Length: 271
Image (spheres, rainbow, N blue to C red):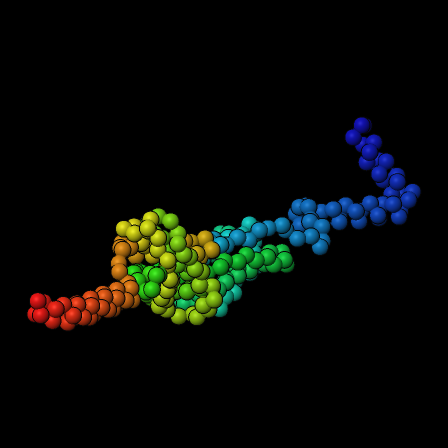
């Protein structure tokens, strides 16, 4: 009897108030989807993230690179890569895509991975730099000019030059450093750094080394020259001046000697 009471009450309400019964039936139908599964409210989007790995990569010019684009979307509608670099193979899996970029030669570029999920698009970015460490770093023997030593460091076949820093170290201390940010060429280049150094007594017999450093926003490439000893040397100009002075002194002594002999010899002959 207890189970029949709610059903009897429902039938009574439906008969007495037909509008209420229809409204109740409509609510029950809206609350159920196919096979009775709940429906998500309209206009909502699934929250998800997109990531690129690595976020920064540096490679020698002409090399290829693989980039991973992963996402947390349960059912992505679309996934693509936008870049000016030439694309190669593509490998896909659940929640990830691997993209290959071929023959990377641009000194600085970007790749954007776009993923669309439930009508909403998100993206992530990787920065790519092509670089070439110096083929050689050569420090010339110091040349004394006047009262200063001329130091020259040659850096060959390096790229990109705009990220290069050249430093001269004498006995472990920095005597000069220069950043070459003003160079914007996009080709391999040779660089020569010239510096005039007024050496003091404590600088002689110390090892002199030319260091290079490529700062590639996360990757640092270092190279060094063979050490050169800064030796004490005579300047050609003072040596020439000393020779002239000695020659002049010898000439004066010879002239004085000639006068002396000219005056003294007749006096001895008369005696």
